[in-house]
Amino acid sequence: MTEPSTAARAPRRSKPATDPRPGLSGLPDGALEAWVAAQGQSPYRAGQIRDGVWRQNIVAAEELGTLPAGLRGSLDRAFRVDTIAADEVTVSDKGLTEKTLHLLSDGGLIESVLMHYPARGRREDGRPEHRERHTLCISSQAGCAVGCPFCATGELGLGRDLETAEILDQVRHAARRLAPGGAHLTNVVFMGMGEPLLNLDRVLEAVAALSDPHRFGLGARHVVVSTSGVVPGIRRLTELNPQFTLAISLHAARDPLRDVLVPLNRRWPVAEVVAAARACARTTGRRVSYEYVMISGVNDTDVDADALAGLLRGDLAHVNLIPMNPVAHTPWQASSPQRVAQFAARLQQGGVGATVRRNRGQDAGAACGQLAADRAGEPPAPTVAHRRAVIVRQSEMALRGDRSAERLPADLEAAVAGWAGNR
Ligand code: SAH
Ligand code: SF4
Image (spheres, rainbow, N blue to C red):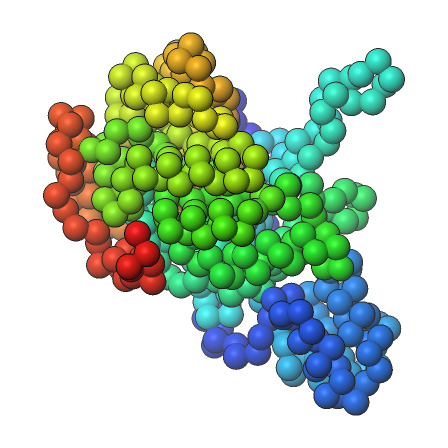
């Protein structure tokens, strides 16, 4: 049985104007010190402001009680202390999942999801086998250009890249929510809205701030960056020898089907994606996670399981199987629990480790991109019918083994253009 959600709704606001002030949490190293010096203030004031941002998770300059009022006013005029107002919080899964819809300064909406995992098991010494965890799933873009047909964010198209501070302020908001109970964020995953590797510079700046002991101070090993397969981006990450976990949203091991499920596959096919991920795992010594959304009758057959096992066998890899959350504009349903279990067993027999994951927040319509898509409004019925017809036609072709001859959609072509000549 599902639990009714509790939605704390803020009063509706008119669309705010774009705010030109930089976000405080996204400032590059040394910028705060330079600003404090330019105000004629002692250097230790920069440390007080940084503590306010990263220890107190302040959302307004007036919370900085240790600063003189004049400096607080100057800070407020120069920077946005908070770049993402919390607009609506939806609680589900008996309080274990909290999804926040954030309002950007230009009126755009993004989502973050805070998931609580209570301690489990008990060791002989009385300590828990698995410690309590608090994982935050964050967005890197408002919307997404990749347009995977099973994803509510893909339905929205790309709004824009998030600024570094807009990425980091999602983390500060969650830390602020946890603080009164004495809890801390233990993991951050880039699995919300957007394709992180199509906003890579800012994502890397955000990861650097998260792992910096003087800023958020979370070990990079507790961060996951997920991509739908931007191969040059994976190669660039590999050169940086990242200590975070790379996750690849695979969803199909065969090109004809992946062309439909992850349209970016028409640019970087599955073998190139896996080769790039394999090279990353060899460089970092860290296991790659492969995400696989299970869609009934589409990508969940034994043939798909065998193709996936053949692709990943022998790699430093692990597959997460995620039953699909139903999305308005698709005709698809999640695979049954039995089919998911059989698929997992077949992968394991084929030499590839697999875990079945439950999609958090499903009961509250709070899966990836769904709240923002709901707010954007259901597309008109003829549009939904047309999209369904296209998906059915394309997936029939794919299941026959025909590759898509379609070009990338124009906005996706534009989004990957930055990587042109960098295949
Ligand atoms: N764009 C990146 C990161 C964000 S998507 C990527 O695709 O990897 C994060 C995850 O949410 C992906 O693995 C995606 O497949 C999953 N997801 C999206 N829509 C879903 C749905 N309807 N049901 C279950 N998982 C979904
Ligand atoms: Fe974009 Fe990821 Fe959704 Fe695909 S699954 S549309 S890449 S956010």
